[in-house]
Length: 181
Image (cartoon, rainbow, N blue to C red):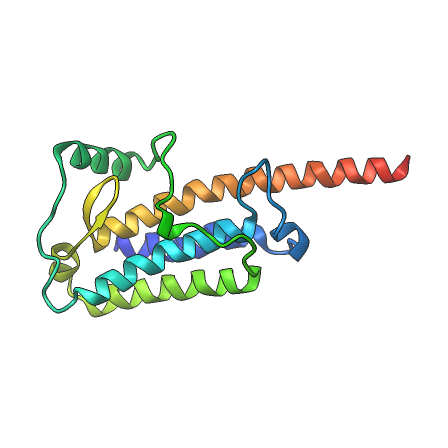
């Protein structure tokens, strides 16, 4: 199933490139943006908040889709094309702490993914498709749509991580050259 495949890709696309990064670099902010640890913590919070929300409405609540026509269009474009619109900001409740522990952030990401996987395994497809949680920009999404959102969201941050690691390599090269002088 496409949904379980996308969920299974979240951990590798985010965490695999980070193997071998030292703790100092995990916590180093870049260009007034987030550190690697903050990116991972943000993703963990985002996925976990949704899983918790679906667990709360598993008894039959949350059965109405609520979205404006603009949100519905944005949902189809974003989830279909797999791209975030420019300038989209994270909701406050998903913002990372100032100095998260890298190991804890990784563990929390893995646990949030597993929490979502449990929902997919426990809920029949009609329940997955018939329960909705509100996204602040896209309107209400069902569980498979949220998994697609998480995949698109993690892919966006994976590209940021890739750029971050390139910058980190260039910064290390510059430090090494300066030390040789």
